[in-house]
Length: 176
Image 1: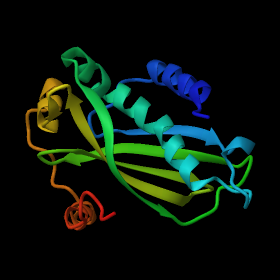
Image 2: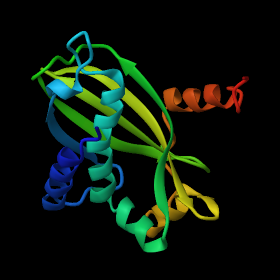
Image 3: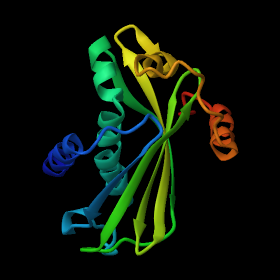
């Protein structure tokens, strides 16, 4: 089941938090609950993706992305993700999530999120997010401009650009 109660808690906490600059980092603290684990008694990989919503949605709210998109009748949607898992998060362990916007290209925003426990990164996610409307996708620069950021995106790090380039070679739709 989707963690609506946890999301509501994070949404309320983010409303109390000061606004973030477009490239600010949103920090949130979480617990790995019994309903988050897999048969190996650790955070389920699919659940980790769901829990990243608990950082990304407040990040979008605090930076103004959510309100600016709503004002224009636009939406924000996940358009791709790459995750690297390195350390276990076990039941009842606390962890910190860090979420930040890295930049954008002509089609997508790129967001980096990571989970940390005891000063060590347990996993990291690179996500691309599309700005959408009934008529199709909107260039991210338009939404950034709505927030007063008329400049071009900062250069994307090489590892992000490498992922973009590699993903562009992937056939779509996949072979049956």
